[in-house]
Length: 103
Image 1 (spheres, one colour):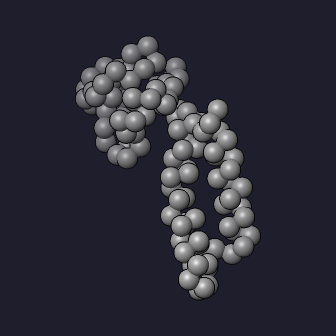
Image 2: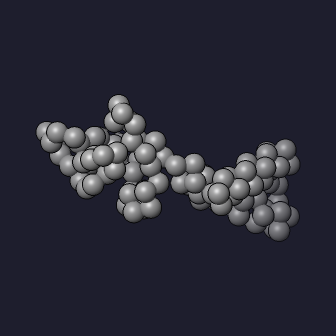
């Protein structure tokens, strides 16, 4: 777990478990780009909310491999892992994430 200091709704640096104003994040939940890009907000209860733009970019990055695999399978003439319907659903989702990321 990582701990971060919060001041006036912003993460100001790494904290410690016994430091007042520190909040805890599971490993892998927060990275330097979230802090650097101010891609979050902290509500009055200390809950961190990630921005729509950040979540959309993360979803695009997390699904890139599915797109590449599908295209490679088509180009190789082998059976695809995704059905046509699953691929179309993924394309629609990725377009929506792209639009949110560009706002």
